[in-house]
Amino acid sequence: MNFDIHHFAYLTENIEFTVNEMSAIGFTLESPIYDIISQKVRVCFLRNKENICYELVEPYVENLTLKRLLSNGVTIYHTGYLVSSIEAATDYLKEKEFYLVSIFHSEAFNGRRCAFFVTRSKNLIELIEL
Image: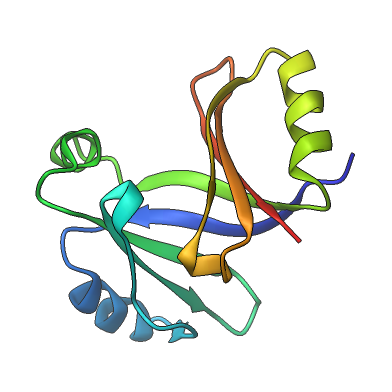
């Protein structure tokens, strides 16, 4: 089973401010800002010359879970991985005792299927189907 890192998600109170801040250290905006209404967030993607990708995640006011994380100083929030099959990856991770949070279609990935899991050590990961 291959899990290829796609991005590191970074929580922010203000996506536009953080885009400008990250551009000062060599990151370039590579996507529009998407409203992911089902998850109550705005997101966009930045990349640098080393091909490191950040997904900036700005929670809506009513997204209390992510707002709470921000108020506690959490900024790096999850790691996104590309997988060839959500079903196969989901089955594999469940066998490893990872907890499936949700499977959904994401506007940020052209409607492709994605899934969030929590690891046994309480890390959040996102799977993005190729």
